[in-house]
Length: 440
Ligand code: UGA
Image (cartoon, rainbow, N blue to C red):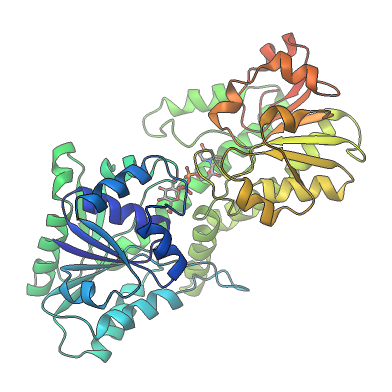
């Protein structure tokens, strides 16, 4: 099959490379000349484990290419994917669909032969209808179907998630009709390699598919927020949140994943998608109060994290040196979007602290966003002379720190572990004043 992928952001680039690896011929299209130039040189603009090799192999084998001018690729494509950004609209939190609609307009006049236009971007319910109307208006004779195919991959584990998904959701209207049948056939063919690992393709109508994406992210965000509140309760009553998580997670109806208590969820998806779902629900007169509360609780949690440093220190952070380990919203990514560090560092600085930090991949992005934070070249430099060290992101390399060396380098051995990567009893045995999340 021939695929045109509009947008070489996270989702577009990973999906394009994976479809090429499935054996399809993929052209990735982007309006940003510097991005395309870098990709053509084999330079990957984001950090994602395994992506550089996947891109390199598929470019070399002639299945993957990058271009600024996608007209030819769109004309020849069996499927054109829209994988552009849908950021939160400033002011009201609705998803900004201007890039999606611009892509639809661009595609419309180029359609030749039957083409499936697939929205892969996370888009609110009803966006597919609008995309269809735009194409129909511009090119009334076009032979096409608009399909929703949301993406569930996680940053840092994106390739595995794409190739071994729990499910692939495909939203096609009028599935039994002529256009619907042809569209379903194209989508099944695109994902055929997944038959091997028995990942189910779930065919539903388009609006249902669009909502499944938001419902999944909102549910996961709520699950994290639930365990974070349980963590606070554990601290108040002297219980252990990791054991609570295990105790409830072994119940298969609950499941053990996404029950790690921490500083609050961040990233490019949960914060934006939960707010967008809240807005959609309000607009349709069916408010989702659980999600409204989730958003509020998570926002205030991130803001409250800096306070934990003072609590553990037992004194104000004014004129103290605080070392932050990890800045990205989670490990194995360089993504800083809505990262808890963006609340924690400024709050510490505002309270008079000197903040020094290290992140294995996120320093470049972080330096643009975190005014006044001194970036250090490794973890040991970041703890040098510190009155307290805060584990903000659970990168593997912070799990294996030489704690004796850390202790020697610090002014005093105080650790606030917002990801529970160390055991309280071990840390106390090492002579640290230590606090984790939800562990008494
Ligand atoms: C999330 C979803 O997990 C993906 O399924 C989805 O495709 C993606 O959004 C998207 O919509 O594009 P992602 O944002 O990459 O993926 O990262 P997650 O691994 O889900 O983590 C999100 C946030 O939740 C992070 O800040 C992480 O630290 C936090 N988290 C996650 C916890 O605090 N506890 C957990 O148990 C799990």
